Image (cartoon, rainbow, N blue to C red):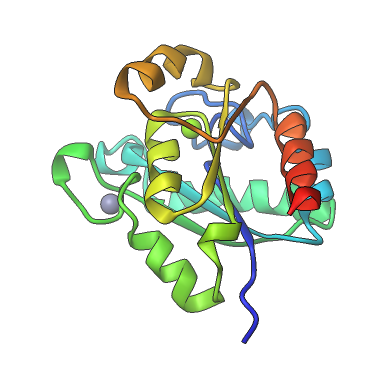
Length: 185
Ligand SMILES: [Mg+2]
Ligand SMILES: [Zn+2]
């Protein structure tokens, strides 16, 4: 069976504005370039969201709240003919030491198993060092976005010695870079 390629997407600070534990639809703000960027990539890649949602573990919102909010995003994207195949979320706190919180790769294993994705030809896009480490752990190429918390975390990335394949300042630029990269190889 031919393996497929994927774009693994962090959600908050990548697709939508990171408003710290947002779960209400009225706080929903799509980031610029997301729709156009995803449209550029949708013929070549499957899309997945992989998101750490410790707000659930902290009791700020419930799993149901999370789904309501996330489904709203999925609906907006669907109206633009963009399909996110599946959303993977970790509801735990860092201290819980679970197996699913990025940069841990439980969800990578699930994606490979269920969708036969070739991670070496896939990309992870995130705005936090743990997203980049997650992508590296998975064997993906990685893009660090300076939207969301990205700007704040740029120094942290350097001090941790985590090196993304690319650093981009918005989603559309990232999508164009990925497209350029597929043409090269
Ligand atoms: Mg984020
Ligand atoms: Zn977890």
